[in-house]
Length: 465
Image (tube, rainbow, N blue to C red; front, side):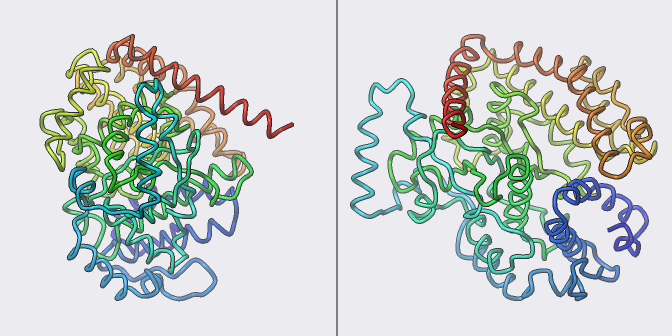
């Protein structure tokens, strides 16, 4: 990859290389075949995203130019994207979804009956929880046919009955997917006009699924996600009930994957999902996909977005959502200020963890990429968080892990990063949570999460027997 980036201008080439290389290296250890696909995908991205330099050659075996592979048929993809952008809004309101929808009579009756059983149910989330398998919503960069399909799925939040029927009733999901349906307004300026937001989402989720599948000995296609478009019945009044029980679904997901674009923290729904997940999950269970989106043109936007997190000023597609979310915040958090501080502090912390993994290559990168997050922690009034970040030394971690072989070197580096996180950062995050979330809310949420964990453990025990 570094060779393929050599023709880029010095500053941008350096930044793009160090941002992507750690992710690629991690994939390379897992399985060569998928790594080639990922390398190929990144070569395609850089061919499309960077203007001016010669196109890198495909790192797979075909030897074609990556720009020719950028979707095998760029023109076709552009036409489909224009159809999406021209004929459909990327987001629409809950009321419009319910009002404009229709469904077969049998499914209507089934959902009507399900809705009737919720009266007096102390745990509606248990009844309503669903998940969708990765093969229905994710694909590799090399799967051109599926990328076409993903353009339509990820291009809008408007779902159909077919989308709902992709999912099935489950006790829990592996990942809650948090993202903004609409792409950033300046997407083409930052990422390039040939990089489709919908395709990026599908490819990122495939990588996440592949990592978990390797960890658990599964096929990546079997990993499960909670995605509102699939797991909530649009076109039925039950949709409104599901949205009001978003916390129940968050608790029933083992982890959260955040597709963290630079405008993510400007969306109130995104901020709420982020904070709510961290209110009753360990921070290590939150994964952020940001390396792809953090480019020279977007890095400062991340640093500016977090201090501006505000219930009042974050955007909502429908102002009714702001009213509902404010009610939830009053219910679960000590105050609106406490909610905002919790979101800001956890955002700085988790972004710093990610940047620490890619800023250990030199003192220059540490100063230019990691140190700004320490400064930001001070700027938002969280000096304890800043002090914890000051104990991070990724450059020294990298040097001490050197000479052990590529795979072992990465393991040693991450061991030191995890030790720093557990010793310095986790206590700060725990203290921040206790100051921000109401004790009674933590107790209620904790009971549901414990119930889910016990049920999952019981299922695993039966499977092992």
